[in-house]
Structures are given as C-alpha cells and as structure tokens.
Length: 147
Picture 1 (cartoon, rainbow, N blue to C red):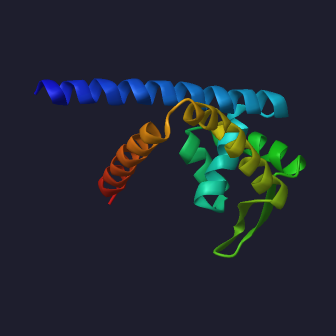
Picture 2: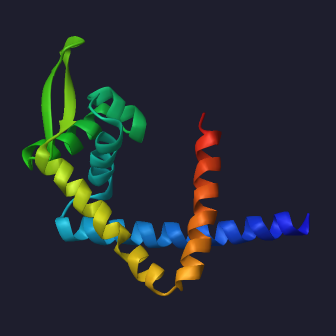
C-alpha cells in the first residue's frame, strides 16, 4: 500500500510540474501573438478534432453562441479560421483551420515543447532511457483507459 501511495504522489508531482510548465509555455506564446487563451483553445480544438460547427464551439467551451461567434469572427478576420457552408446543413457554417491557423498551432506546440529538450539535456542517457520506458508504460495505460 505504501508503494502505491508513493507512486501516486510521485506521479502527481510530475503532473503538476508538467502542467505548470506546459501552461506557462502556452501563456507566453499567446501573449507574444496577441491572441487570448480562449482563441488559442479554439484553434487547438480544431487542430486536434477537425472541422466543427459554431454550436460545437459553444458546447465544448461552455460559452454562449454570441461569445463563440465573437471569438470565431476575430480568428476568421485574422486568417486563422475559414468558414464554409456545412454540407450536412446548409443553414449552418463549418469552421476549419486555415493553413495559417495550422502553422500557427504547430509553431505553438513546438515552442511549448522547447523546455522538454532543456529538461532532457539535464539527464544522463541512462536516466533518459528509464524515463522513456516509464512514460511509454504510462502512455499506453492512459490510452487503454480511453477505450
């Protein structure tokens, strides 16, 4: 039982450190671009989940249709998103990332990961191997939970 508690504490400590560094990276990236975190979150959702309608944006982010419309309009005007008629419902609009939006998110992801390269450089090759093996186990276990 004690080992399980220690494992949980260790995992939580890593998760806290990782999330802090990751979110700090995104916040820094957001500030450097002039976009808000909600705007970047919308771009990230479209990058990872693909095209969606305005109602999905409202639901995913638990915001009103008017608020979603304002956020999206700014992203369309900046060239990060494109709006087109939804083939399944001609009354609705389908939102997709533009090439500029996709490149923007890829750049943000790369910048967010830079600190991990610095972290890895502080570890020996042997420790990197141990951490890599442990992370593969955790990643696979997490994927199994999603099935």
